[in-house]
Image 1 (cartoon, one colour):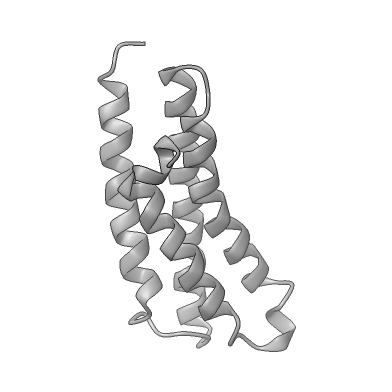
Image 2: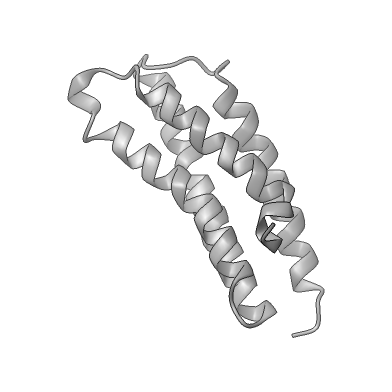
Length: 118
């Protein structure tokens, strides 16, 4: 196993990707290249940046990529709210809980890395 694959933040964000893909597959066809595509890209960006950060040379770069992952999560959370507002999904969808959990784990990882000596 690669180091990032052992992180709960990475695992939850991978489950979040799956949930977002499942959710957006039921969106109206006219949203295939609109909101659905944006949500998928934001979701994929989260575990991708965790992995890329873990593969970098130092803690400083790792912190930067975790920050990018957190930004992508914030973007996705906004898009999830938009999807609810437009009636495409319910706020009871598992993606909301996964996003919340991934966010808490990313914040914890970010704080832990910041306390590590560069």
